[in-house]
Length: 204
Length: 383
Image (cartoon, rainbow over all chains, first blue to last red; front, side, top):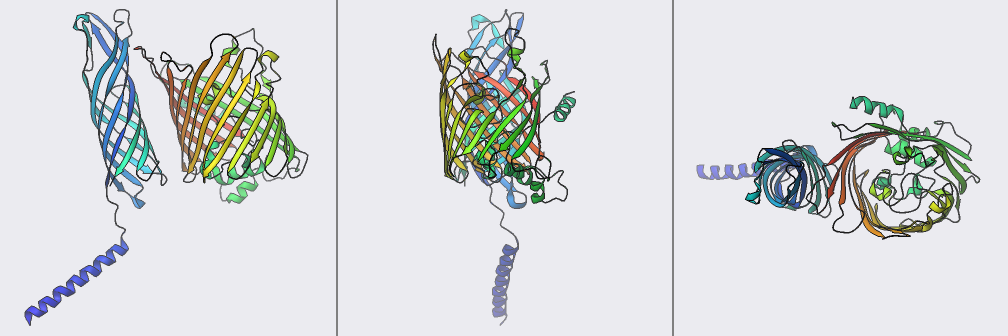
């Protein structure tokens, strides 16, 4: 008798639990699941890099351009899930060119390789069903693999460097899962403005 | 100091132009709001009411309904004018600060201060005259050249408009040439490099055929009759637009003109896409072929793109990307511009625009030109 009673109580409790869960579902909207994104595009910026040769020094206005890849974790938040927290890991690489600005160092450099990794937290607002605007705070570590003729005696700065920035992001959904992504970022340590244009794809 | 300059700029100026971006509000055709079916120039009664009741913010609207705002949008507010006359006044001022934070000289330019009028000879407005007269700034490159006489007081447009049938309109007189997307930014490559900027109007004839899903416009022009005859660009242009989905149009333009020194050949594709309520994407890509009577011709390209995003009623953020190359040769630089800003209509008759623009060059040479920055604030008042 005791076992039967326990069995009945168990069934009843499951029933209540299921009923309760159903009520709870009816009251609360299921939060949307976080998802991930892949992004690939072009990044371009210019910065002044110090050059030294013997006792002379100069500035080299440099232009850096190359592809940028990102993997992002997207977490919808807020009422109606119109806010998105986006955490991106980024990888960029490309080439640099520039020319010394003084008569003592008029050297020209081309095809100097650079590599960059970074993280970019962003807060994005979904303005319409197809568009989003937001702010992004990228932090990058960059290496320049200078390929120089040792006989020139040229010693450029910024073999490695960090920079943190603040920028704006705009995305527009072109298909159900792909977006055009444009960002304009002011990098503080590099004193430069990064332009980025990318193709972004949702991965469920 | 910059804040004082911006406030001064806000206090000094006025105006209203065509906004092809308003396809985002589902207004695909310029004829809906402007007397000129290609946009630009004075707004018609519907355009004024729409500006007041839908586009502009309600910061100073009080408890008035949108309908009441629309009814009070005329030149004298809600006081009705005779059906045959619609006056207007436009003033526009800009403050430009090159290299903000640097040594660039701040410039104040009164870009426009003019009166306009639309006179109608038929009550249904199917036959009328539209004209403007006012002060235009002398371009900087000409202001220091004493050999060239430039009129400061000019008429930028004066034309007769006649509706031939339900779908066909014709315009005769001095107007902007028909070509591409007629955007407000008259310093954009798509306007300055194509020869279609704020003082490049011509006397001519326009035929505008309009259907709900497509438009076709032909423009023959004999040049600006106020110019010396050898300078007048004589030719024609054509533009078509097709609505492939609601608030999504694609189009093309071609222009051919010549004077005694140079021939101009332009060809462009464009698209306008509206989404949400008040947000849009614009895109135009074209070629510029200048053919001098002596010397080599130069074939280049330009691109204009814009994303505009309505934030709240009356206030929009925008992002513009532009590109231009004068000659498609390896040694020539690609000029790139990226800009962003705020376009605001706090109330009807008042518009202001604050933006920052950066200019960058791409070329094959190792020498790199430093990024150029410009900050601008404009105020337009359109009565």
